[in-house]
Every structure is written in structure tokens, then in C-alpha cells.
Image 1 (cartoon, rainbow, N blue to C red):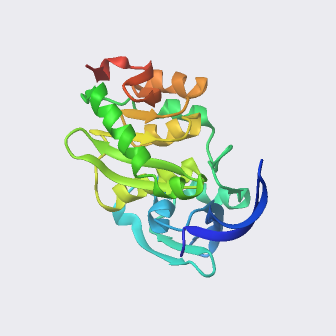
Image 2 (tube, rainbow, N blue to C red):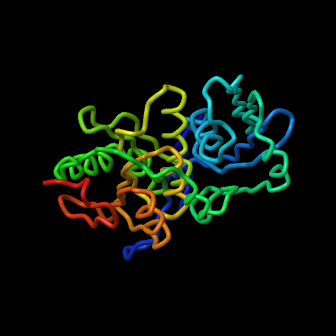
Length: 261
């Protein structure tokens, strides 16, 4: 499916108005079916859909073992992702009535209270990042944000390694979706998170931090701002949060010992 749709617009400037064709980001509803039951409908950009679905299920605790994933089928025309998981967690049954439709740009779609992150294991990582590398990554994130450059309507997220650089980069109308695509890609390809860094264009809220914490990610970096709850959780869980990373300038909100140079 196309990620950019051309639509007719009326452009108004000081010189007057004129008819033009303008590119806008594509948005589709995708309903996740867990077995025969409808779990949730996500509003998203139609690329990396399988990774997003898997990442969402991993983030929310429905899927923890790669061997438990029996199959996933995406029907883009119907907007349905059919997922089969072996031994679905018992808690799942009580959540089917909590169907939520969200792009993830506001509250997002989560089934657990953010403070539950405090039950996560504290992140233990020896990762050190030079601020020049951070500047390079953020510059590359901006350069490779093709969907954003085309439409101005997408968030970008990337998984990075100190030696390998950007491992995978995704875009979506929702910053939560973009991160879930990263998580799903890593899960499906058996990529560990312990020595990786996530960089994003969106703000770091408690839900975003929660997703990172559940995967044991030691560092999350954004061009935008974090929230106070995200900083609080990060401090307790040993996660480095960096905001306003632009050029070689940045604000380190927690565990600054990982930033060197």
C-alpha cells in the first residue's frame, strides 16, 4: 500500500490562492485479531505492518517467546492482522472488552498503567556513547525521514549500535507505532537490545519509556522533550534519557554516565 497519497488542495499565500496537488501521509485502521477475538484497532502508516503488530504484542506482554508465535497474516484490503499465539496469557481474556482505537500520538494504546514499569528489571548495560556519534545518528535520522520530508506528518524511530550504526529505521503517523515496528523487527530477527540505542523524533512519554524498559533498552534519545514521569521511571530503571538532541547539544535527563566525550 502507498504511504503517501496525493490530494488536491487550495494553497493560500500573500499572493493569492491557487489549486495544487499536495502529498499527505497515508493512514489506515488495522485491527489485530488474536485467534478469533478482536484485540485492538491501531491507526497507522501502511508499512512494516507485521513488525508493528508483533512489536505491539511484545510491548504489551502478549508475546514473549519467538517460538510461541504460530503465525501472522496481514490482509491490507480488509485492514485485519490475524495472529495465532500458542498459550495466550490468561490476562488477555479480560482485555478484549478494552478495544481502543488510537494512532498513539496522544495517550497511545496501552493496557497497563505506566507505573507498572517499576516492576521491570533494572537495566544493566555497559553501553557508552560519544556525543559526536549521537549527533551523527540524529543527523542521519533527519536525512532518512523520507516520509516526514514528503508530508510533514510522520514520526521516525531507529535502532542503533555503536559500531553498526542505524540497524533499522521506521516511520509512522504515531510515535508509539514507529517504536513498535522497531521492537517487532528486532523480535522477529533475534536482535538483542542490551547493546542498542533507540533514537526518535517524538517526545519521550511514560508509554514510550515503558516500551523501552520492557525490552531492556539502556538508552533512548529524542529530538524532542521527555515527560517528568518518563524521567522518573528511567532514573529508577537505569535507563539513559536524552532529549533535545540537536547537533552536538543535548539534555541528559538520567544516567548521564553513559554519555562520553
